[in-house]
Every structure is written in structure tokens, then in C-alpha cells.
Length: 380
Image (cartoon, rainbow, N blue to C red; front, side):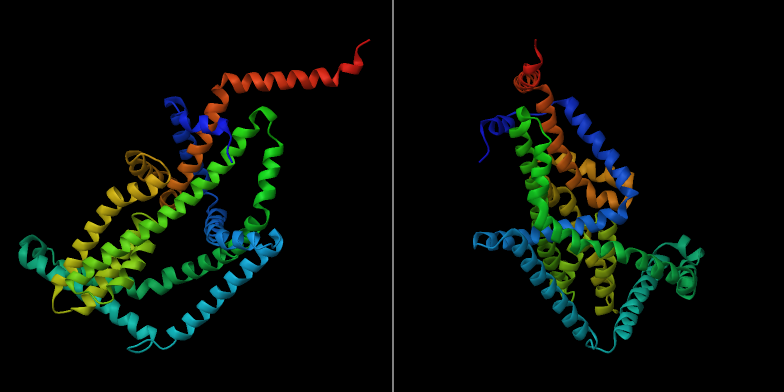
């Protein structure tokens, strides 16, 4: 139970100076984390896994298991189920309907290319200037050059990059396990280093940081569900196949703002163009549905889910998303909101600690008592 000091802390609000420091520290950490992405991504995946397994682990703790045994059992069960699911997915995907994966991928790629060529031809028919520029021929040459040189220029780089990222991503399960087993020990380690006058507030700070991270992932789950429902409904209305699956994959990709949205839009448009090669209006409708869903996501759903989960004003949420993208690219887009939430909790609490006359007086009095006690037998 949090004491009266924590209740008083909830009622105190940070001023403009503290919020300026919060935003400044968040921007600085975004710049630093961009150069440590090899460690940040495994840490994020490990943290997500930790919060997923925290509920089952607490159930085992209430059932009488020790923390070590509970963390081992939960980790083994989760990663065992995950391994079986991956094996089943690989076995199921070895023979997709309609031929091999190479044939299916080629069919959808050809459908996307045909849609682009059809669009270029329509533009040339409507805009004489584009016809004089031979837009379709130019686009065809660019497609041919890209496909012919892709393997030579990009394939090796992609393989090397994936191989370089694999060891760091394997850190995620180890991080999740040790978060489960040693999180309480780490909190006690931090608490022992805090002066007694600030002990209650520090416990509240650790609790709030943990709750902030949990609220972020809860908000992300709600956002994913909303995005899936809206996209699936819109795609179903215009007649695109597998609308629920496409909506879910697009919602997962949207975890990375802007970049993930572009990838999801391309996927949806390619599927729509392949499903209705003789009716480009279906693909155009998919683009309209996707744009409307993204606008709702960025300016309505995200502030109401992630922003409200982190208790951040919608205006600050939207502005910090743009700031994160400008400072650190894709990594900044992924990390800016959870990072801002944690820095906000720490900054507001430290602001209260540093400006509280009562706490400073308690700390000075406790320090004077310790000095008096230490020097009591030194007086002549």
C-alpha cells in the first residue's frame, strides 16, 4: 500500500521548468539510443515478453512456488509453446494454396506492378504533359533496372545485416527470464541506495515506472485491436480478400509509425490489385481506406489509447512522435512514447523531491543525527 506521501505526490503537478527538462532529456536519450539500437531492440522485446509472462508468474507465486521456480516454469512453457507454434507455421507454410511461396509471391508482385502500370497509363491519358514525358516507359525502365540489380546490390547487404542482428535478438529471451527472476532484487538494490527521508517517494517512483511501462503495452494492445477492426471493416466493404488478416498485419506493422504504415499500405494495395486486376478502383479504394484509418490512428486512436494510458496530453503525444522521427528515424518513432512516459514519471517525481521543503528538512535532520551518533564517543 502506498503511504500518504505518495498520495500527496499524485496531487502535485510539475511546472514548466520540470516539463522542459523532461522533453529535453527525452530528446537526448532518443539521440543516444539511436546509436545503441542493437541493445535497445532486444531490451524492448524482452520487456514485452516480461509483461506478457508477469501475470502467469504471479499466479504461480500465489500458488506457493518460489520466485526462481515460477520464473523457470513460466519461461519454459512460453518458449516451448512459441517453438511449437513456429514449427507448425513452418510446416503449414511449406505448401501454401495456389502453389509454392515463390509462385504466390511472384503473382502478387506481378499484380502490384500491373496496377502501377495501369495507373501510369490512366495518368498519361488524363494529363497530356505526362504522356509527352513517356511516364509509363520511364516507370517500366525503373522497374526493370531495380529487379535486375536487386540481387547484386541489396541481397548481400540484407543477408549480412540480418546475420549481424541475430545474436543481439537472441538476448531477448534471456533478458525476459532475468527480468522475471530478479526484478524484485533489482528494486531492493536501488531502494537501499536511497536516503531514508526519500525512501517512501522512491518506492512510489519505482512503482510508477513499472505501471507506466505496463500501461504503454496495454495501450498498444488496445490500439492494435482498434486498427485491426477499422481496417478489416473498410477492406471488407470494398471487397478485398482476407480483410481481417490484412488488417491485423497492418496494425502490427503500424507499431512503427509512418514507416510501418507505408509497408502496410503497400501490402494491402498489392493484394487488392491482384484480387481485381481488371478493376483498379478496388486498389484505389484500399488506398483511401488505409489513409482514413491512418488518420484516425494518428490523431484519434493513438492519443486516446497510448496517450491516455501514459497520461500524456494528445497534443504532446502527436508532437513527440514527430520529434522522435526527426531525431532518431524509425527507432525514435518506436521508442518516443514509452521513453517519454518513463522520463515523465521520473522527472515529475524528482521535481517534487528536489522542491519539497519537508523532505529536505527530514534529510538534513537524519544526516545531523547520523553525524552526532558517529561522533558521540569522540568527545573528550
